[in-house]
Image (tube, rainbow, N blue to C red; front, side):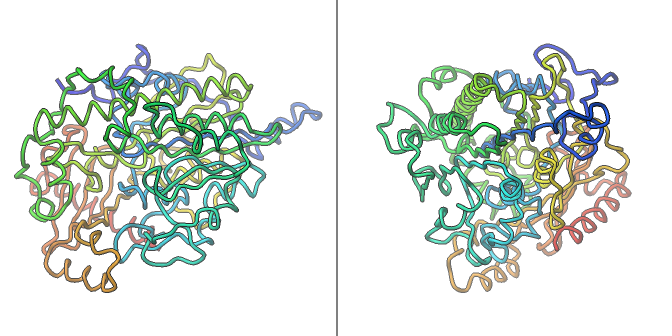
Length: 533
């Protein structure tokens, strides 16, 4: 038995209505129009306060490993409650499905081929100060918000964009202090280049420099830092807190809160239909021989026992994250902040965990690129029911939407689209995304050589040797197409997600779908040319 199809999910036992949706008031969103309308209605009324915004991002969390997405094997009651009272998206797609470029795309609203902040040449630049100043936290700070960041940074800001993107030192305080008022973060794991400020904050000192509780994990500390940020929030100032959990990515005992592991240690999880025991002979040869997801699958998920070990630990970490979300919501209520706070929950990318015979991410299958996305708006009446939304959303749409919710226009460099019209159901769907662009520019062999002086030469050698599996493609509401464009000859994959949601039947050579294929090929190139500038 496989997990329920997301189109059939239940919200706390109530099936989503397909024809009767409760309109979310336009007054939920700070805009000049709503302010003007309020002034007409009551000339003496004050302008509505700017909403607080909390942006929560997990690391490598698959979209369907949350209860609200129909997976009853995972326990995420607090996140499920946000979904039940908010908007849960069924077609949120990562523009790129690996942490560094994904995080930069979310911050800036730009595609990987545009910002070029990634792990491997030739797209291995740091993020310049100038580009960082166009990120949503920078623009919110300029508009008077108190800004905070907790957790995994995953990229480096420098005065000018430089190579490689993974320098020995990051100097977060020197490069990010002007944007974040409150900071407790590190590179890829909590003990790697960790910095925090304000240094005089006794709460931060206790959390990160004081004596740790036995078994306490990075996720527990992130939860404590969230509460500390809220406890130190000045009155009458809006805030934007960005939390980047290190979970659910790593799975050693130090990353897993063992009291929570007791809930899952004996649980047998149902493997999806596209999980492959052993090797997947149907993978494109260039992927099978070069992508790191293949050997990682062999090591970590290629047998039922290995698969269960991984999923139990991912489920534990998801539960621990969920508990921090619950504590955060209670703190917001306690301080009277929830009614003016918007909470956004997502992940930087998914993880294949044995699907298609792959463990990693990057490759443009659904388990990698499809994101959980939940938007809860505390300004809604408690009685307002949540709803499922199937409009296509790209991860580059997050930054312009966050800015719009704060009444700020996205900068012209942003390539994403504001989806507040989707949230409040005023968007003309004929003018919305018909497809979103996906990219994978990661090469495992090049990652191992990323600090070599001749890295560009090595890159070309890999391409000439037909070892490049870089790809790009599009996702529509029904179709998935992508092409390994540096391979000679190019390799393509085409899936009908309506009939084949687990992407087990590549239709690329089926003449019945020639017209669909040509249309998606053309759409891929159109979007790439538009977004690679």
